[in-house]
Image 1 (cartoon, rainbow, N blue to C red):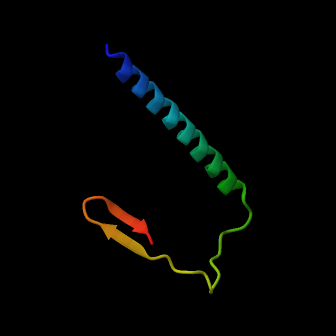
Image 2: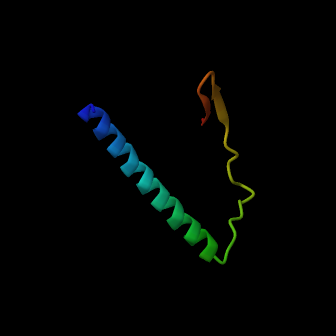
Length: 59
């Protein structure tokens, strides 16, 4: 097996595990939060730009 491929796979697994952990933490915080998020009337409405073949990005 190519050692570079193994290293890349290991790094991706590590990053995935970190992201999964962060999602779990945020879900716990959300479920324990007594308040719901309410947008203020003067909140800026985000504008999005479509990049062909890639996706939408905030402007």
